[in-house]
Length: 86
Image 1 (cartoon, rainbow, N blue to C red):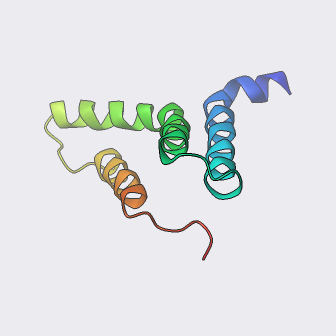
Image 2: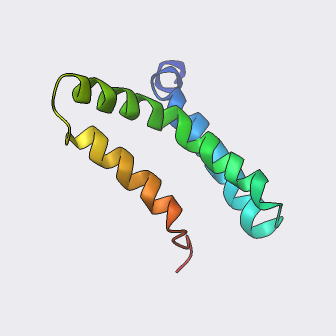
């Protein structure tokens, strides 16, 4: 069990901050800066590795790799403010 947690610790940290952000936004109705910070904190652990791979691929000459496209898509999705509950 410990090995599983160590292997996926970024995902657990991200999930924790994501749950906190959803609670802050919809149930507690916190200030937008609070849940914006929590959403960014939830994206950072898992998104940082993808952004790093995107930058490396751009440096090697591959500008439209799947890493860059997914990075842009995830940021754009949140910028659209798509509601989490339809």
